[in-house]
Length: 257
Image (cartoon, rainbow, N blue to C red; front, side, top):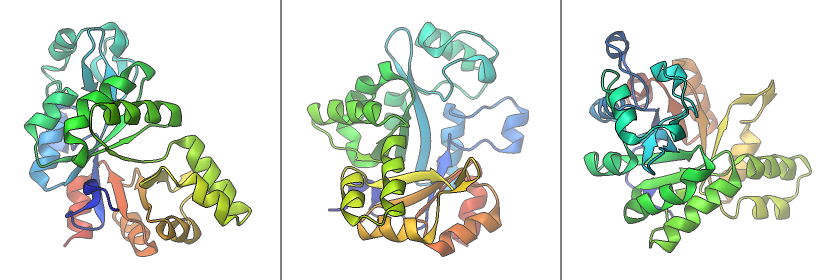
């Protein structure tokens, strides 16, 4: 059965990568994964926001990509080394901190694609999304971390959608290389989506063969991070189901004129 995360939204899916920061907003100091970035993606008409989850020192799940605060705020401490209140102060002039519970509460129609970035955040993410699991997809580069978040959500009464981690994607590619439908079926058993770059280290990942194989197993293919209009059109014409982009506004104009 199709998970509700996939239902009712226009295709192809446009996933606003860490929200949407316009050039004007950036000039005023707004940064990715801020409250303002999510609000701007919502205002632009994006159905989906792709974001990242870390846990603060006092146990609050926040939308933040890096382990360290340095690139985004100039503070050298790790996210896990500050409290939510401290991080709120650091983000105050950068579009505002947004916690995971706040994101789910403030944007009740938005669907979230959440990448669990830290081991200590996995269970907390699962518990936080359980009641809103119908509009959440959980992923991680680490399949173990992803499964821990999914198990926590299930234990709390929810069942989010999920996208494969690096290990699972490697097994999918290996199954395709040896033309084993049995291995492919096993690799895709847990996945609702494959979220992959078009190329990795010079190797093409997204091919018509990968897309066809995923679709045979009712698994979608989403490609990150695509900001060029021609590339968006080309990938969608290949059969890709979703585009993860820093320019959700542009993608919506290009793919849903």
